[in-house]
Figure (cartoon, rainbow, N blue to C red):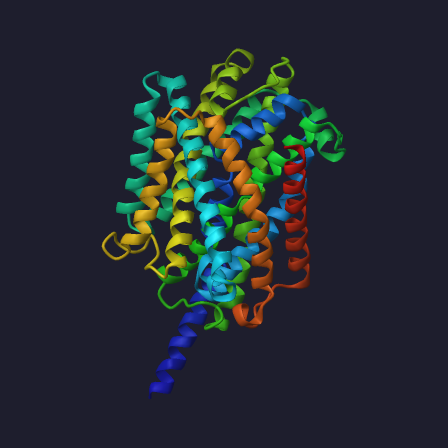
Length: 434
């Protein structure tokens, strides 16, 4: 009797998975799509704007080059989370010495805190441009808004809200059309005009570091775990291999769409500033808000308003993800209860880290350190810590003790190691240039 019941449950779960495999594309988008959108945060917008303003279409090719590398490394992080049922920090804890884990998590926490500061500052500056007022008040307001969403909104309601916030990025697609980008921009993507000067290489390193960032790895892996735990009948794939086909297919679609969307938006930002700021010989941009202000006389009020609104919208998406990825990493390191699906009482340590990271980011802004310095420090630490994390991820995804029968394919391993090598070269170049 019990055997028959278990068989019926298995058949029901399998049939449900088959039905879900045919759901519309938009409903299959989740952690990968949200992660890709978060990559275009205000700090990223500033970097892409500066690249377009300083070099016109000369760095557009880099976004095409990084897209498959970005897809590969994010698929790796998502697979680790879904197969094991644990985030990256928990898996690193199980397979590597404690000093390795503590060093990586500490660097991630520092980088994310400075990134939060840069994003909060950019959001406040953008709101000042649009409606006036005091940037200090806006920094505190955005920090409190971010914390409220993560601490007091249940995860099943919070996840769709994050997906909704990704719509803010379409502002940059619209802006690219408003400025009438010439056909030469498209041709520039096919023939990269590689330059050897120091500033060009520095900007290329900045674009690579902005596009492939450690917090994205931790966030997507943890969100796969959150979704698995929040869905009745779903288990880590190494314990429920019959669910693998559907979930690995969804991860692939979700991540491909998310990363292509992310770099597509970055492309629009770079094209917009190249067609306006670079064309007008405005070649130095220190923040996303400054890029928006510079667009006003060149592209009109509509382009300015869309660009500024995009900064605020993407910041509302990115700040919770930056704080959340730090909280996941620290909580998993110390085996604390982890997850946005838990209440404040159930996961006090997890939420404490989330609050501290956000509060410290706001305090960095309020201390008088400008957002550009915060952005520079975040980029340096992100670049340094990304290489060992990517190398560790590639070891984990090929380890049968971790992945069981779901080790990465040769193609995925080749792309993942190529992405790691490219980032290592970028970091080496950064130190040489420094």
